[in-house]
Amino acid sequence: MSEYFRKYIKKEHYSIHYSNLKFKTSFRNCILEALKRRQWKEVEGDDWDLMWAEKEWIHEVMDHTHLQPNQKINHFRNHYELTRKDLMIKNLKRYKKNLEREGKTEDANNYNFFPQTFHLPSEYPLFYEEFKKQSQNGESKTPWIMKPIGKSQGKGIFIINKIQSISQWKNTLRFNQEAQQAEAYIVQKYIADPLLIGGKKFDMRIYLLCTSYQPLTLYLYRTGFARFTHHRYDNEDISNTYVHLTNVAIQKTSENYDERLGGKWNLQTLKLFLMTKFGQEKVAETFYNIQMLMIRSLQAVQKIIINDKHCFELYGFDILLDAQLKPWLLEVNASPSMTSNTPIDFELKCGLLDDVFTIIDLEKVLTGNEEQIGGFDLVCRGTPIKLPTNSTFTTYLGSFNNRQQLLKKIAKSTAIKLAQIFQETQIKVLGDGLKNSKEKEEKEKQQRSLSKGPQSIQNGINNKIGILPKQNSVIKRNGTNLPALGTIQFKSNGKRQPFQNAAQIQPTQLQQLNSNKKINSSEEQTLTANQKLQQLTPDNKLSSFQPYKQQFKYNDVIGITNRNQQKNEE
Image 1 (cartoon, rainbow, N blue to C red):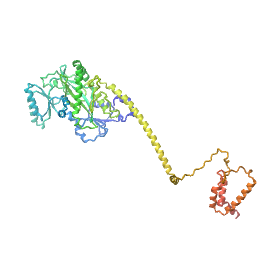
Image 2: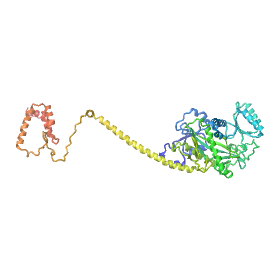
Image 3: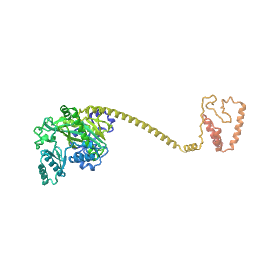
């Protein structure tokens, strides 16, 4: 993660912390340095989150590999439809013809940014007719450049201005026993009037990041560089590759090579220089045309490229300006060189790669609606994005790269957003926990009520048929007519009146009580023990404050006292 994201975002706020991410790569240059700066872990097996692979790995392995949802890789499956020289020209021509067939003449005329090109050996007759036609028009010295379709870094490139050179090349390959099949080439009309600075030829390397083809989502990097030759330009000397080819791999072998500067200019420096020479409006138009050239190139292959959510691609466009500031597309690199030859070049490429990884967003911290991330500007999302009409820029390409300030700003706003999301999540989790605990308590209460046995079932049946349960009467001891504790209460037809004292009982009442006891004793002798117990329980129940009297009464009922007396008499 960028240093500002690591500084402002707390560890617990990450959905995927950067220290848990793993990468795999075979490159040992700025790519490895940028990955390690983000504090990701390098692995060797298949358990990786990001793989920066070589093109050959994509062709040989990827079609037979199942990628996990969290895994990202730096190439689309058929990226060669744009990055192989012959297929790029083929797809651009086809797209242009389709626009003309649909009646979109104005859009078709915009696809005039690539030189006249033929594929060899399949289109050799067509090339021969075109070469012959130009010779008849007095253009016999018009140079053509030959490029192998599958090589990079300027390997195998040479310039011709005679048809005999083609015949000699063809015969050499045809009769070469080591090469049983002729290597395919393209031949392009050489741009003989390139824009020169200090009498030297240059081209531009500009970076474009594609994260999706459906919809087409493109980010253009503000900073690129111009690559200069180390020899003055001479159109007559077509055999000297140091004069015509700007590839660093070729120029660094020249005796005039400057190791301190590396033969490069920053793109912003180049743009300011051109403004002083051609004016701001002309240069702004040129750089806007470069941006649209890159977008149109990907639109031409949008329906051909296999879109995959696991894939992204960092393209390196090689663009040449002619003397009229018209941009020409030379080629598109699927694996632009990430090897630096100067300290400035090293920091440029490390910053570029860091911003690429930020856009890929393996940590899941961005919203996806950002229009600028680091040095990248969003230039297309389905359709090309235009700047406001009141803007002083038509494109940010070649302008000041304020990636540090912008990353700091994004990191702060992202930290605030993630903190709010974390807090809301915690509140939601706490609320869900309370809700679950309440539901659990209710379930336990229901289970306890069901486990009380037949009485609860009977209560449920009574409730269904409308029988109300018996209610226990509660005696409130706040009245003056309540009996004193320890007094005996007898149930009668009237109100309960407790005995106050034995001395207060009248003689007539005492006689009546004794007569009742005699009657009751004669009746009790005729009852069985169980009948006596049933008669005692509802009517002659003693107070709970006289346990011993109650026990004596029960003994009398079941005949324990009489049996003891009989034993004693015996």
